[in-house]
Image 1: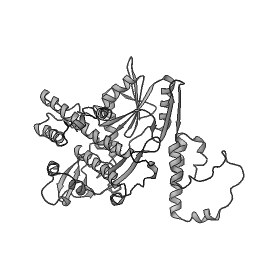
Image 2: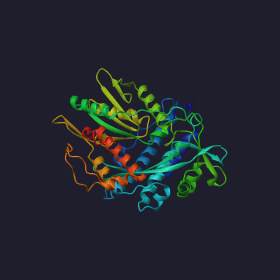
Image 3: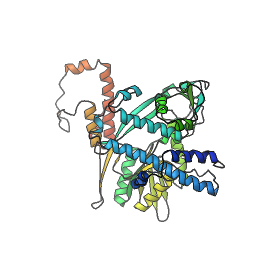
Image 4: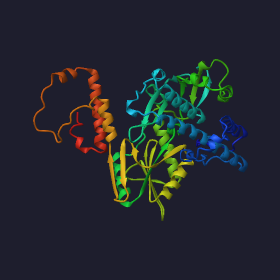
Length: 435
């Protein structure tokens, strides 16, 4: 809960009270919670910024309360994932709604609703905004919901995700933002790193930072309209929970929000998050690689650790599991995150490794299958590779399709999908992916 880089000289009794209220409301002493021993693999460690100075008594109290509260959040996430895993259907067959209204009309609404509640809980707990009575903030930006079904490496449902996103295209440069660029690790760098790990017998694990963009701090003053679904969310809360929101008096529908921290959709959000992550890695003695600005290395006399960054996905490489565990603990001490174990599936790449034979293979089979389904080609006949030299036959239906704007859009999307396969694991698709 305390992930801000803003210096706090003292954690006062009111903040302690907020933690106590959260823990008390969800009854952490119940026998049900104590049975969740496997939560430990999901729950982040106590996350207190180094800048926070606490009295000894308060520090102990915060440690106890925050640890309990994070276990509760982890329990909720675990239950949600368990419910999703009971849906015996491929993730790719679940229609993804394009709006809050579509999600509400979907037969999967209970799952989308849980994801929306989880998102609001994260935003509010993180202190992402403060409430403004009326529209006195001035210029306001609107928001929308982006939904996604996250899949496992076998294509089954991992969990339903909902993200509240600012319509960043409404931002004005110089007023709402300035610099926006944020790098990500290149796929060729990631492949090289995995090759080195395999050759040297290093361990490769994965971590996922929860609601990463919410860690970024804003220097600009940005206001947003009350998000769609917020009043529905409030209506599901009991009286005490609503009181703890500390909403201004009056009609809640007349509220607006002033952003304190970064939010998805803001043009500067990726950059602000990347700055926070890099500052943290440098504070624990990692240095940036000269080959790729998103690979960080820490080398001591006896230990080597490497971190590759792709937005909120981290690939951790080290000599042994013990060093990996130490690195995970360091990261969890700063950010709420999930340790996802040995690396098997990342950025659409499936990684299969045989330690006994010192082999490692990478493929994008699931990506390719999803692409074929997306463009209605999963029943199409295969053709020879390489292509035959015979010229292609003219197709009148293709000529007519060229006049259709929707076809042009689909064509560009297909080329983009092919190019991702090409730069990932299939260089043989180079000719086909050229428009």
